[in-house]
Image (cartoon, rainbow, N blue to C red; front, side):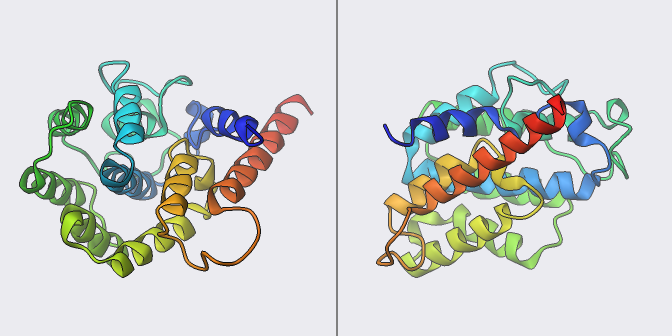
Length: 223
């Protein structure tokens, strides 16, 4: 209960909340952020199926990805920017990347319905990597790891989780609605380094960062 307010703030403090949040962002970076969150959800599908199912359900709530919506998930809003580059002139190099919307919806529905098809997941993630023109060696390796997650070692999972959290600390991505739940899950599963060190758990630290970012955003709006 002590961290209940943090969970609420994480839900409200979106990485992409409205059209203004897209101004000045490069389409390649938008695509990379989308891919990172996709990989995080793929890991959650194994480590926290309930959370993955809820996030997939919320992402599909509006039925399509035609617009950035304040009440949508960040994954929905990132998909909307990628799929509708002409609507978001503030995004540089619009149209440079893409996703397969039909396959994306099928992937989300499979998570919602608890359908596990590793071969289909691997094919889907590889196709999205290509369409999003992902260049990062880490993200390419991460895609291979989560695509065959059941066969990975604990050390590999820990390395992936640590690198992903470090990435989320950049460019305000820690405010994403999936990051708090992700951090809480990997902390609980022992997939973060220095588990024996005292202090706040990782998910609470990420929550505190999100709370601070949200408070700063509010002060900028009202100031």
